[in-house]
Amino acid sequence: MQPVDTLILGPVVVTMDAGERLLDPGGVAVRDGEIVAVGRRAELEGCDAAETVDATGQLLMPGLVNAHTHLGDSLFRSLVEELPLEAWLERLWISEREFVSRESVELGARLSLAEMIRGGTTCALDMFWFPESAADAAIEAGFRLVTGPIFFDFEGPDGVSSPDRVAIGERWLENYEDEPLITPCVQPHNQLTVSPEGLRAARDLADSARALFHTHCSETATEVQQTVERFGRTPVAHLDELGILDGPTVLAHCVHLTDDDIARLRSTGAAVLHNPLSNLKLGSGIAPIARLLEEGIPVALGTDGPVSSNDLDMWTAMRFAGLLQRGAHMDPVLTPAREVIRMATTVAADALGLGDRVGRLAEGYRADLILVDLARPHLTPMYDAYAHLVYAVGRDDVRSVMIDGRWVMRDRTLETIDEATVLNEMGELASRIEHHAASL
Ligand SMILES: [Zn+2]
Image (tube, rainbow, N blue to C red):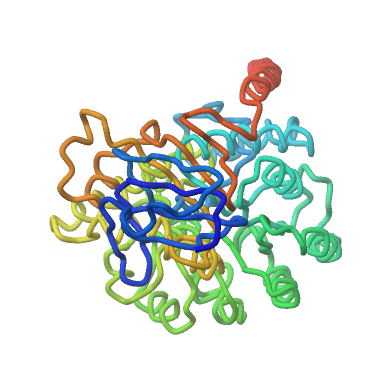
């Protein structure tokens, strides 16, 4: 084999590749940001490498993919709590109007990226105002981000009115076309805040740019009821009848679905983005994930934004995704641990249109990978790696993180984000946000 840049030797390797091979002890070789070999330790030993990492006692796996979040929400984490959903949103909205700007969103995104990298997340789907702020922060941090123009019928804190959103969206998509770490998507908020014409325009924009379509759908019973009252059909049926589900589509939440909704999801191939923590915390309900999996509908996992869930911890999201269906259905074999890991790796990458590049440790894939420290009391012994990852590993166990072949965290130190500065700047802004909130 030709010399490689990085050779990681000795960990338990959870590949999530086509055969879902588990290699113990295994190894991975990386050249020019690409995985060029995955195998047993003995097969890779002696390979000429610029850097060799002895990862004995650790577990190597694909970086986690957070399939639904709002990075800029970190500005307002825990600002508004203990209110019913409508009152909660109304109250949050006042602070958003006052403090959301291109600069503040970039700061919020940097903070969220630091949190995610620390927890082993290497790719996320973000929806927020000023998506260029999150994109720029991600490029700077070496983080893989799916994001893009948002659609709302009313004028948001970005000052853009609805008729201008298509033209602005087109320019946005052109600007980021050649950024290897940015995957474009078009994202209307939901079917109540965006008119049928707006949804159609967003779909057309996504299609012309060959981008993913991302929206919220059937999150709460109230939203479903209002949609039925206004349009005479459920949110999923509404999107389907508008032809929205005909191209690559991901739908966040899907908590309240009818049999007809599920049939439409199955026939169109739309993927569901499951956010168990946000659904529980906001009292939205429990999404029918076991049923969706049974029907063969792709389910990817997300955390939702830090105001609703309240952090970006994919390990907690995985644990809840696994536990919830079992408790709700009183069935201990639903959502097997390996299935939950797929929701946060392979299926998530596939749903976001990145399935040929990330989500698996396989030759030809980009090197998005994480090392988890196993030499810990709560992880010893380990008989079943998948059960460990879902039910015992926590984000502080993540030791090192590589994205696109570049170390972004090594031995718990962030390499691409000046964490102290971000925390400082956020502290200053937060005291202004809190002062303003207190004056209301
Ligand atoms: Zn959301």
